[in-house]
Length: 357
Image (cartoon, rainbow, N blue to C red; front, side, top):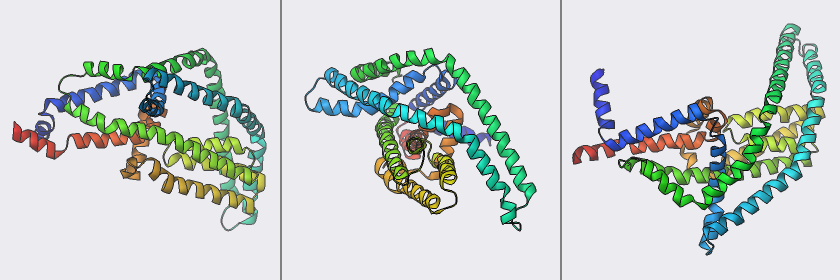
């Protein structure tokens, strides 16, 4: 057994470039694990910078200086965000407040519906089973309310931090865009000379990350807008709030769509009951999710669809457990990174290195 490990180690890490890549990965993982909460503004700024670099690069091709192009893009982006917050913020807040106020009534309706099931289907379910389910749901609801209360109280302490982030993040984005080449050169000076594999992985991942972030933003906007329009047409209450939730659900591959099904189905059930409108809304919602997974995702993420869904779900669970929201958000790029690393350490390259040595 020890001989196999020794042979594997010598084949994989006899090249100093491989050792450099390994130590760089371990250092980055340790930094994100121990200091992830401290560098959240940098991560947010990096995501936005990746998103805005595309229009900045296109403006440069039209002959504009990068500084001028950066200012134009930042002004347009800030204007759009401000318009979105002013336009949608009050509506979402009002609908969220109404939903929270109606939640006890909705829970009581659901409880009454469940308690009548033994009378309608005595051969399938009994009163004890229903009472057990109701008690469990009530306990979970109380626990969830306590969590929300504790989060709201602790979040008050972070108001000052978020206000600082509102200033720091736009500044970071601006300088990341304006001084992109200078920052890349500075980063290259920190990397050792044995960096052939690092550059190979970087060139393979850089465009993928850019395409992923841009595609994910487009997916959120398209899925959220289509869901909002569909819910509005069928006169579903809280259409804007549910549309936003459906749009944001695409941040968590596969799992997000299943989670958001619960509030959509619950609102439709308590508004329409077990009627035609309820089933129509569920069918429309299913069609939207099917079109998203089978048409939109392959169009927006042509390089990421090579990953098997099992690998994507495992990546969501693993990286989400490791780094929380950012691990979930970057689950697909991180899975692609693992694939790129395997390509960098491929057997063919190892054989070539052995032949040259």
